[in-house]
Length: 385
Image (cartoon, rainbow, N blue to C red):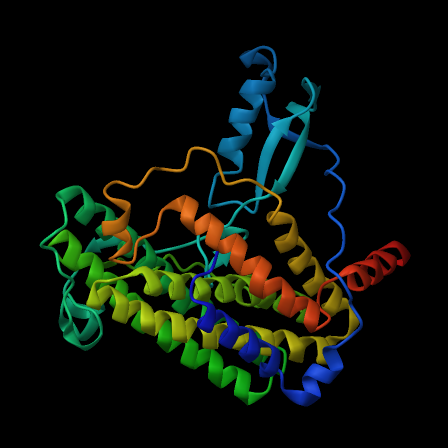
């Protein structure tokens, strides 16, 4: 359950109003209800390379382990959840019927992805270049209190804030690419400007995260050079809108709500102040994404709307999946970690589900971007294509 009800209500209002009367009117369609769950996914065929010298193909259990290496957690958009048949050899490969589903994202917010893989920089010992105001501190020069923390809890908090900082650092690159995508497809200057402002926000978030990570670990840490290969621009408005819906309407709306929940539970002044900044900025970034989707649908028409509807339908399906098994237990007292802004994996899963169910999907339905009639229209269009 989302505890910060005031933030939730305010965010819903901002998202629904962000498109403005003219754009919102172009989006609104009748979409009563949320629709019924889809039937179970049908099995499909997946293969991996195999050589005769290796002998017979793997059995089902071994094949599932092999697929887990091919579709690694946090690096793939899919997860193979079961192998439904014995192997069939085809042209030097072992092929199986499998059940695949979209993978749970490992982090909220706007990741930098390339060919389905999330990219972040590696951490390294740092000078003050990525620390907030040159100090191991939160906003305004505050330093977190370490007195009541065990060494294990400090390590957990350092790791958690460092992971968050590296993700925020990657978001700077993601927004830079987003700004180029917008310009390449003729977006209005207000969206391009907002994308650059958001990138600067993410610079600030990364500084806060690295500063807190440095304070908890007792030594400065920052990012190494970002692994930046040649980056393609979104091919068309469909691709641009799909990315904006996935990374912004879903990812950053969830990120804003998670940061608000972490802030509500945090007691340390430095951690709370950092989360205050992050929650408010992520809410603006979410607004930018919903605005972008509205503009793209207005410019690109029904094909763009269908692509966006598919994103929200995937988000709805994710609510029916259980938490990932084998989540790492928190190292330290849960209350002490929460007081410094760290929540367990199970808490984050529960909160993400609540954010989708209570904010993301209701807003998508209210704006005519998801729901039974939208899904039916998409299915008819796909069948006639």
